[in-house]
Image (cartoon, rainbow over all chains, first blue to last red; front, side):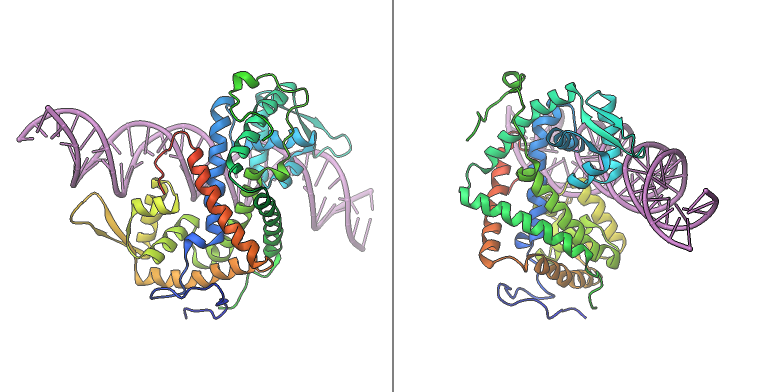
Amino acid sequence: MSTEPDNTDAERRRAPSPPDMLRLDSFLPYRLNVLAQVVSEGLARIYSQRFGIGIPEWRIIATLGEFGQMTARDVGAHSRMHKTKVSRAVASLEERGLVERRANEEDRREAFLSLTPAGLKVYAGITPLALGYAERLTEGLAAEDLETLERIIAQLTERSGILQQEPPEIDL
Amino acid sequence: MSTEPDNTDAERRRAPSPPDMLRLDSFLPYRLNVLAQVVSEGLARIYSQRFGIGIPEWRIIATLGEFGQMTARDVGAHSRMHKTKVSRAVASLEERGLVERRANEEDRREAFLSLTPAGLKVYAGITPLALGYAERLTEGLAAEDLETLERIIAQLTERSGILQQEPPEIDL
DNA sequence: TGACATTAGTTTCATATGTAACTAATTCTG
DNA sequence: CAGAATTAGTTACATATGAAACTAATGTCA
């Protein structure tokens, strides 16, 4: 009941004893996760202490800083954050005077969010630090590799979205 | 290349009139995070329901499945999980009879962890699903791009480790 | 040897998170 | 139009998490 015959043998190294061998060090979901986590933490270390905000708050500030005015729903959709996470982070930012809400008179379920002047200041303070971090992170890479990376990330992100739709019921 | 990489916030307090623009859609830490999350969730969707285990548990099973016998410390170091997360996940797996501990008689602080036969069965069940998922995820990519991706991920992971000013307790 | 430091692992505690239930507003259907 | 269904957003609750304190074993060094 163990094996599935659907592994391409091209890059499949037949490994030790028992079942299908999974090499974590070359397993893409795992590698991606480790990298993303380490990068996120490294970046957060730069701004969290200094500006007293966490990752979800920063994402909201960055999104509003870039797009100006959005509903909570759109912020969440764009940054792929759960709506309760967005709701709580926005509440916290509003309390601290960094974000303000303006009710949409045409649909009063939603509200437009935007940065206050104080919020813009935080945005302006963190942005160069964030850009500097990304710059230091990638400064060893060839420009061409960086381009390839961005293209592949886009492809994979789209593809993984598509995979969600497919029937999660495979055989077995 | 654009700005000074060493901007202490004292120097950067006043922002350039329009703040340095941050485009989230091409900001690497952000893109990486979105991708990793979406991929992780997609994979977890496949095994969590069916086998009743979460991400930390799966990582431990995968690590022990690959390396056979390790201490909790080494599992954590290899999979980059916090030691309390490892501790709790191992406790849960032991309770369910998927992992067993064998005290190290030469150093009784630590114990060797390994998969039980039942744990091996879960490992054998999930592994082909995980490999299949990764396969479907990347099947649209050119083999060459995939190689490049893996190389860059390795480079960035190492680089981001170096960028940590205050290394917590992670080696590798 | 005997304090002191270190290490593996656990537990405590406060916080962060997601699911599901909820409110209020809007849209859809007949 | 009424009532059902949907949607934006919040809240309640249970779980997951990490920092720090703790336990027990080992290492260090005078």
